[in-house]
Length: 466
Image (cartoon, rainbow, N blue to C red; front, side, top):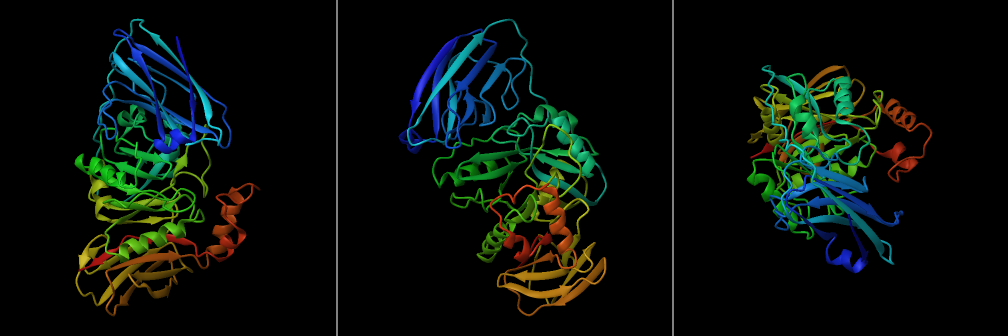
């Protein structure tokens, strides 16, 4: 048993938001137990994780052994098992580090005590689960949620419960992006199937912004400390063939790094009323500046310790809908990169398509004279067509299976569409307030936001203009 006490100050936090406590691990160790103790408070929140001797410092490709953020104050790592969020397997001898994330510190600083216990009892070394490659060989529109969490990071619920929630929602694919770890794949790799394809994901989580990584086998180093580290993050992801998406760039966790070479932006996170109009405005500005960013959505649902009934604040609110030649992880990633789809309020939300001749969302055209918009399930609402200058057409959707050809006069840079609630607005607001079960409005929302903000029901990806 080894007990280490340290006094951590705001000067430490300013120098580096990650504080390392080294300890030695002798050869033959098969289990490590770590406990963190400090005076938790609203202004004192310290995250917890671990690295083994292979860590080279940021950016490292090796050595990560786990992260639980502020959700846990203890963990174990063994050759055959580990606390959710932590990586089991071989325990190399040498200098390990407990890593503390200095998320919040009071003005007086904080005293932390870390207790480390080592064990050398005989245990097998178990491998990590292998990735599987399920395929459903049918072309069509497929529905999924690209952002959710289990108890491998800061949710209460198990992967099994999240799996059940995805089946309940009728999803075809799901990306589980636990914070700064990939250990949720212990469950999701072997459980991926043609009925429900699980997409490899991880949420890079820092105090200055969050981003999702998709389609990468390895853990990606999250220890960003400078605004320019966002470009390092993009390189780490793209060198491994993955996609990078900037998450919920809005209150209360905006993106405060430099903007990297991202592939996607999460333009809709959780219910529309959770400040998503700000994320959409920033997306519009980036498209108008000439960026090509695919629009995606995700619920950011943190699975509780029970299966929740369907409603506006659960999994797949919103839902990302992609046109796929087949249902497979590779096809999902390709469609995300290309922008071949749209985001809608729920698995049964309005359907939305844009096309210029044979060119669909995500494609590029020159000098279009007209664009075709198609909407289903939104009778009584409105379709707004937008280019780099802003709205250029506003049409009433007068039936549930609706289509229109919209003439164009020198549109600028791109064309995208939104379905905006009109006839459905009162129902959507009532559903949202009922889901709060009498609690005050969350996320610092005001009643004026509910009464005045346009509510989007679906957002298309752009067609770009050459």
